[in-house]
Amino acid sequence: MSILVFFMALVMASGCSTAKKSSGDENVMQQEAKASEREQKKQEEDISLALYFVKFTADDAYMVREIQTIPHTKQVAKAALQELINDEKSIFPPGTEVLGINIEKGLATVNFNEAVLNNTNVGSSGEALGIQSIVNTLTEFPSIERVAFQVEGKVDGRARDWWGHIGLYEQPFTRNLSKVYEPAIWVTHPSPNQIASVPLLVKGSARVFEGTVNIRLLDGQGNVLAESHTTASAAAPERGDFETSLKYEPPPAGEGTLEVYWTSPIDGSVQDKVSIPLQWP
Image 1 (tube, rainbow, N blue to C red):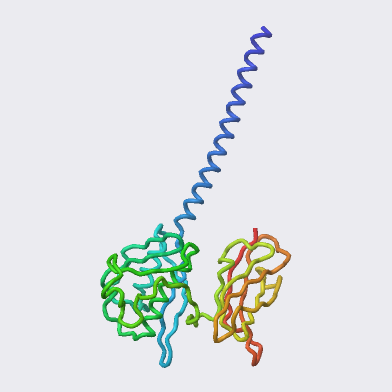
Image 2 (spheres, rainbow, N blue to C red; image 1 turned 90 degrees about the vertical axis):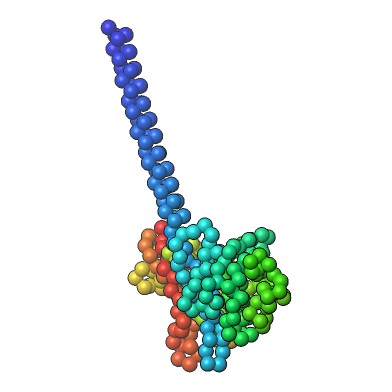
């Protein structure tokens, strides 16, 4: 009798162990499914792109950097250029299309359709800025350092002349921000809504008085956690890069704001402030 009881107890214990194991496996599977779902959602999120548009005024022509959002795509570089070309602010001829982009060893070769060669009537300065707007847009991507153009797969004859002024004679082209006048300041790190590190690395570009860039970090209630200033590599009217780190005591989990700006030498007022929302875990 005791042997029978022992056997039954052993079977029940085995069943409980199997149930626990099944339950544990199910929890692991659920966690893995949730992680996969989060990763999938992240991959399908809209993409923010920095595009460089040409702007004409009564006495000057220059570039403006704008952040625009496009639906998720695997061909991000091509999508960025097509967005630049199709925008209402574009100076590119109607019907211009990007047939393809080949990226190899830092060189992006862009193949346009023939419509890109239609007369734009923007003059030599407009042609130079139009070319540079493409180059600056593409070199926002870390894998691209230089840019070359093709038209229907070729770079000869009319294609080499491009719009008839600067042409494609000295390509490949490299990044040049000297004619990017707006905005006065932009921040490339940290990204909006990212989790703030300690110390917080702050990087960007500025075209400001004496190159002096002011930085402050605020918690969710607007209290200043840290503030500092740094100097860009060039002062207005030139544009320069800046980089610095902020040391601070992180607040409890929540949200905060990084503010980057310059101050007027006349009255000390805040100018061209850029606000970046951040999070703490």
